Figure 1 (cartoon, rainbow, N blue to C red):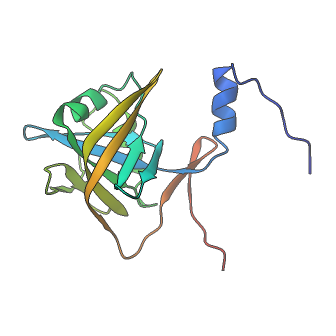
Figure 2 (tube, one colour; figure 1 turned 180 degrees about the horizontal axis):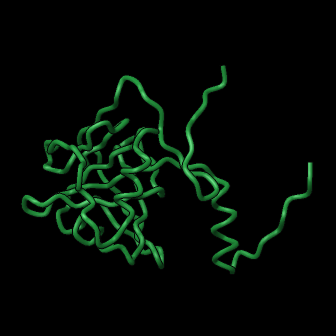
Length: 167
């Protein structure tokens, strides 16, 4: 096995390269402002606590969607299925109609639950913490669900991939 490369943590590009070695799932965080749906792609997502049930995600401070989601105080985290790569890309773009061709139904809290999502969690904003160029956002899970079948959409080393279980 070759020796690992050593990077400098102070260089943003190096930091991003090394963190890209951690495989993450892709979620779309959604809310509504009046009758208008709003959403954003996020790969920085995790469970935070089982009791109480908390999740966390880290939107960038430069996000134009997150302030709108925050203003509602209620949102839905939609875990994408491996067939939904195009949805991830669509919601990651700014200045476009993110909802063009996207099917959804309102959850009990009004936030969009995306058609075909592998899992979803309806949440209320619990707390936020400063993380310099990001915001650590904790959501209190109030209702959730999951599909009976499907595989997650994954992101690794700057590209999308699929999960393959060891048999």
